[in-house]
Image 1 (tube, rainbow, N blue to C red):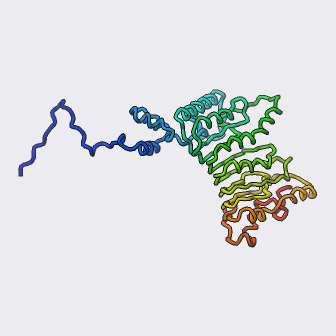
Image 2: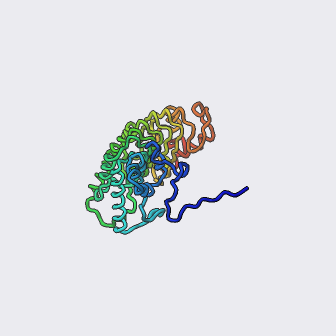
Image 3: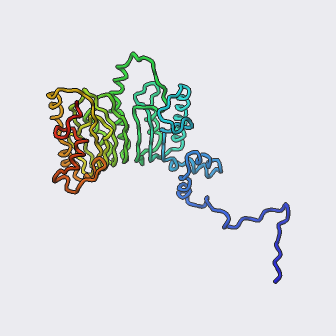
Length: 345
């Protein structure tokens, strides 16, 4: 059987047109599908994709592609290095990156799902509180569901060794911080996950502040709190009510005692009693601890659906009767007189 002759394209001639199977009609897809495909790219790759053609540039400018604002990064500097002391020049470079990144998000009308940041909102010099408020007013936060903020520490900020004469004015600004922060958080009505690490430190915590925070976030499912109650406020207890909260972690807090909980949806609680190393006479210690109810009673009355305490699965009958393992857990987390009061001496 004679072999077929192979037809060769003339040198310098035009290349034959591609068949329909050789190319993917990306621009023929619905816009939502195109955005979904581009959403798998990182931030830098999205910006590179915007340079391909005018249609891709318009797609990349869609707010739906910018769902995460992560200010906890260090930009191109010091990636992965924690607790690094830097110079003033490096801090200014990082601060310029923060403002440029914010402008980038605002110019694209970002529709945020996640916000991560670490700014000292009491810093009157850099005005991080004003910066954050301006950002939130300029982007879409209706769908924001995950907020991870450190309100007391700014990344890469060099140590300020100058003596401040106006320490009283600084203390006044810090005292007002919790009220301003709760007011700021109240904008996120759809927020489901909230982590406030070292939120209130070395100052009194208004017992109504926690409740105001819970009332401002009706969709909250998970709450992590790091609170250090100062020694002058020993004896104060707190209440917390939320119909939606399912997970509560206060294990890193010190001196935080609940007198009442009304958490009908709570399924897991993490709470740990921290040894304060305080020397008190017996009369004073008993007077302080006698104000606090047992955590077991508080949970029985206010968390009927609780299933786990300090990573330990509870028996279904834990509300009817305590048992050995539960008692051991309470000795590590309850501040009452009944459960190991040695934390005060």
